[in-house]
Length: 159
Image (tube, rainbow, N blue to C red; front, side, top):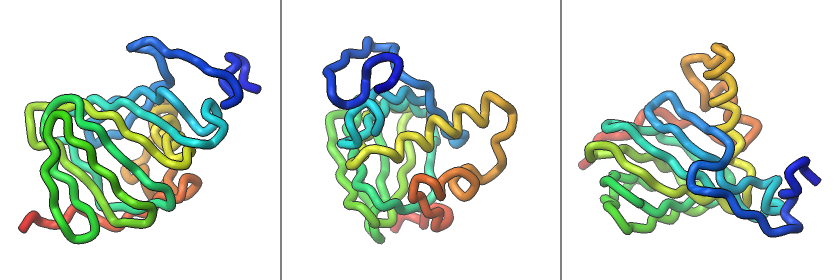
């Protein structure tokens, strides 16, 4: 059991600004609201606030990922296809699919779900390395392996 009692066997509640900090240098600040540890491995849930122009690289991982867009507009790349998702949209990407995204509005906010949980730990690790001043130029390649993240390169052109 964790020191705060959230080991997946008991309910817990976090307030609007509570959670573990997460980060990606491409322009997203995050709060990890639920983790593998707190849900007994079932899922991880992250709230992200993205700067205008935020974009990921194309990548894949061995867990399913889904987003619910709270604010803004995004373009998602999934296995060779581009999709637009605005406020209220839901996007699902199966485990193993090559994907990435970019914020195409004046910033955005989204909820990210990982099933099963664990991948959210990557964002905690990136935040910790950033705070310690040890974050290198390629966090996915440097820290992603322990979370099954595989970097595939830049997002392809939209077409």
